Image (cartoon, rainbow, N blue to C red; front, side, top):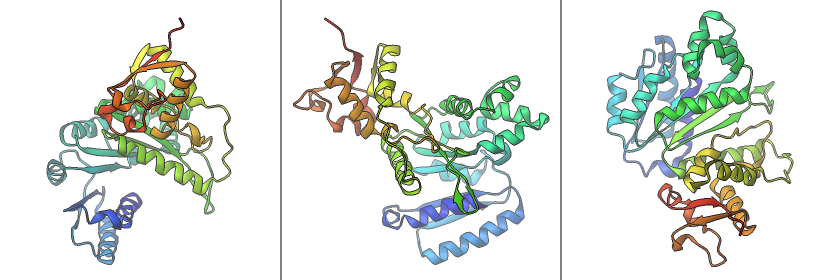
Length: 320
């Protein structure tokens, strides 16, 4: 019940933008009737207190299902939305979720909340190994190897969610708390899928703001690994669009424990890194003139839309 209430409170706290929506629909699913009844009581109180006339809540008193008639109806007639999933104990079958996303959610973003510690606990129960394997999209004999490493879990999830067909799949590790204090560890992962560079950038910007707020003593990394990552990509692909660079950098692990603010792949950080490489004659680029600054670097406007980033080609600088 915690995740639906957290999602609802997040929506209700965005008072400045709620009025721009004609209708707001929230669909929640609880596996048992007791949890559903409790959720109804809490959500009813929150909605009445907020006094938002264009908000309607729907609660399903059964396990989540991609075939739910009301859910499909809401998705069918929504021009935008966010599908938030907390797959505790793997009760959500990802193949069914992917089917729903591809068929009904072309303009709808999704976010998946994953407790990596729970995955490890479940994997310790041998009969559950098949569930973990299906969830991560790996063979059951690989579960024990992959489940030990956060990086391998993240990569498996990243590969798994590419099947949704979203332009951008990115992750952020978040901590847990103990005795009301953050542990500054990577206990949970948020996976975001979207077709909008604006949404993915806002996600990373919000992540950075949270890091600055709750972890103000982050050391400054004097080595810009983002530039190095871009060079590696250019060497690997020979030539690639800025959009492809963004997609590949999103595969990096965004760690809370080892956070490096300057190397998180926001469009601002990527723009700065690419222009440094251009100035140092490390890379060359081909772009419509409207995206080129007077000093020969790329304008920030080139990073504002997916379509613009697809127009600009980055190549390794040829030595003459």
